[in-house]
Image (spheres, one colour):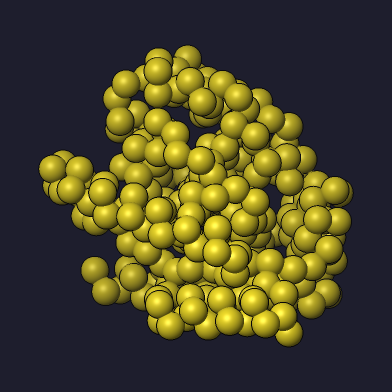
Length: 266
């Protein structure tokens, strides 16, 4: 089971959109996927029709069984209408109670230990992280094996990207203390890109110059993504033949490629 977190230390960059479409694409292609929402706003689940609720809290604090807290996502919410998903997609939802989990559950490995219970069920766990630094970050960094960072081509988003990468380095020592391998950075996704604008073109080049092959293809700013969210669907279901759907399929294929390369290099 591959546990991958989607992160940036700034809100509004589109982490939930990226998380949802990676999870939806993987499930459509035949994988069993768990999308974990660790943001108290619960936007990842909301994007697929799962209302904010204390699923993560109930799992870690109330010690409820997975069958009591997981919410299945119907294929019509995430897969291509004429080609129904082969795999299954579940959401572990979140709400404001997520913020108090570290106050009531002190074990930094509680999250990873609970995920081990479903390692024979899910091929992938995609973790949509909160934008602000929280006490739950430690649990995510101890559980996740790899990270995908999402950034806008804006100065403030770059600052969030830098702080997120710095945070990984800080946790490397802690993981080493427990004989865990370092977290692996799969890639950086430039999101909400506005082509033919000097600022975004210049900033995209800056990211590519700074991080080289880690930078994936940019995802353009498009209203179709917000329209799909309004209908509680991934763009694969909402507009399956659209340019935006093809962009997101490219995202999923790059994700699979990077995971495969990483695993083969171990």
